[in-house]
Amino acid sequence: DNGEVLSSDIVIKTYQSDDKSNLLQTVILPTSCSNDDTFFGFAETLGSVELIAFTNEERGEVTLDSILQVRVNLIYLIYNNDTAGPVTLEFLRSLTNADANGINLDIQVGGKGVGARKTMVVIEGMHVDLSKRRTYTVLTNLGAYSGNEHCNQNDFFKFTAGLDL
Image (tube, rainbow, N blue to C red):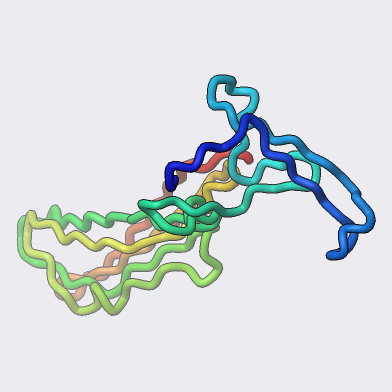
């Protein structure tokens, strides 16, 4: 804010062309913070004006996408409850409604062992859109073996995130 004080209202005029010969709309935007009814937030429209970005001294340019498109971590805890010995992991894959390609963690876990009563931690990100309220689902399949015994384990969970703007 370079010490500049805004007037009590900002007037936004929308013209049909650059020569300003035909005024289409005039919007008065109150700048007072004393009344919650005058708050103008991201993705809100007032007449033909929609706030899509602003510049902040600390963060630089702030856009709606930079705030509402986030990456959350999925933390996989792979526990070997077998007391006899280690197991070898074959694959770890998740299908989500947030990513059409799914999440394939075979490279991170394939061929790796997990000792008896030990846990392996695998972390992978998933994109979440906070611009609308949505339920996200994740179906995970883990394959492992010990000796000649093969095992597949499935897990399903869901969570809800976002706000309708």
